[in-house]
Image 1: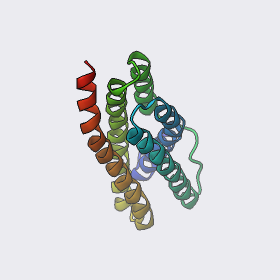
Image 2: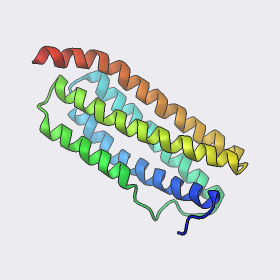
Image 3: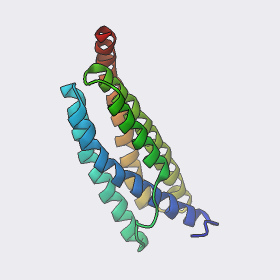
Image 4: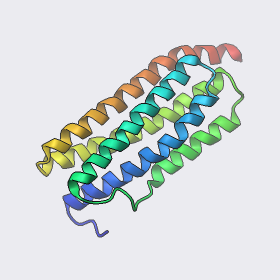
Length: 164
């Protein structure tokens, strides 16, 4: 696609987010399984449910736009998830691994917040208020997930420090 208008940029970025979210749905169960902390495991499991809803919301937007969400791979998310997977492999099970996974997960959340903030702004510029509301809901959930991870990190990081 030759991206030369805000409308095309909007669709291109939505496809990128769709790819990112579908990649995340595959990664979250692995993170949950690798978690030592029950609270962290629960946070990953809950965010998996939210992420599936994010995919559904994006599909709803693509339905309104009468276009397919497929056709693009989010290389940024691919890299973030690969890096997170390597962190899991390189750390021993326990609080240090949990701390590493929180770090990796927050990178993912920040990437998503940037993407959803941008497409929400494009939707506003294009006068697509119905889509603005859908995207804003997802953006708020991403912010909430990041905040939850920060809260969990306080305990996990203290535990990781005492493991040394």
